Image 1 (cartoon, rainbow, N blue to C red):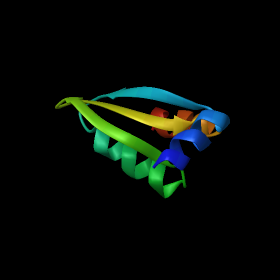
Image 2: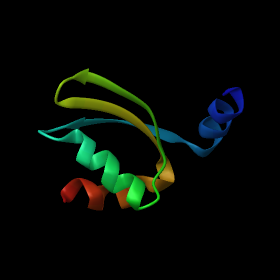
Image 3: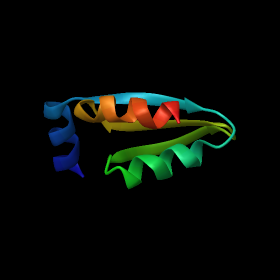
Length: 66
């Protein structure tokens, strides 16, 4: 766990807030495209906070639009 935190610190990561009717659909689409998400926390029934590597952000934009 410590190594993952150190590795993500050096690579850079973003904390995203996903809002909508079905945020779990966003998670499924991200995993099918090979994007690694971690620290998934539900803040409300329709709001989700996730962490993602900064280099994967451009690919996530396409997922979010769908």
